[in-house]
Image 1 (tube, rainbow, N blue to C red):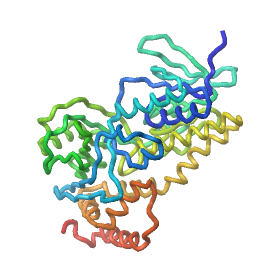
Image 2: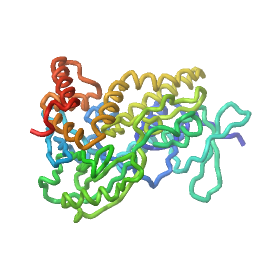
Image 3: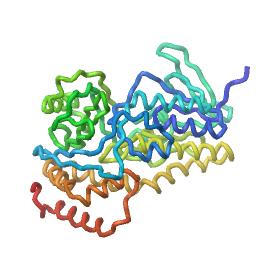
Image 4: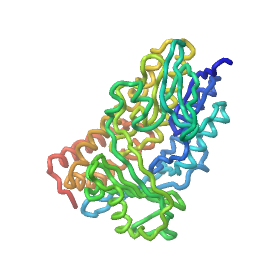
Length: 398
């Protein structure tokens, strides 16, 4: 009996993998989408309205629309950043959102399989072999693929096996608890507001958050400090906000990469996408939009490779992504390295967020996913204010 050979096997069914699988299926390629199941990534669930338009996502998948963000300094000082008339921050529940994306890929022609990836093997035949198990203790099975797309998350098994240096990508570990939202909004919890806490006691090197999801909410924290108690930080924050009395529905944790891999493909027949490629925005930790953009670009690169047999096409995915988003990632990385390092700097950072120019350009950049160049004088004002904060020439509080 002849062995099944797919044009593409996509390992991982999150936003990146599901997007890549759908794009290749719509292009007429045979696609197997392999998802291990039973795991929901810890995620605040924030997406810009642009994502809905770019990827034809229905409004019905939004569980909430946040109209403002509140930045909370170490001193407890809070700065509200209203979105204004330019849009909102959409909120999704990853359990439902990711499953919808996987089902859409299936309806577009991809074949779904619940299984755990084990490894990629090779023999004398021209295409790699993907080895997997359908469940724990089940026998190993195998399929061949002309191209393998690893979208299996941070610390990707595909990347570690196929891409040198992939195991060294820097990560923060994220942990959150999904709670049932309070029935009545208060100063401590507002169902139309995302709260972000820049406090060393809650995270020594990242931030903590409370994001509304309609009937539920995500209370989370991230840190790269292995000795820091993420669960303890969440317990402290819930007690401070009076959310410790809310029912806890589930708890989730996972690493989140904060630096794109230097190489996304092996130069032959394997390429990675999403968290596996390290494309989560530094400082903010935003990943859903970038995962889907990256998944689409990886699919287009894979389609070009499948059409021509020229593996050089695979390089284009990372090149295109960094051309469009590399500058934003660099700026956010510098911001995280400097502003998140001490509570004194965090205090100044929150003070900067009270500036109307900073707020406007921040929201414009978030909504449009690029640095805003239309107001050079505003950028100059922000640069001068930022420099003053860096040098300690402005007071940390007003």
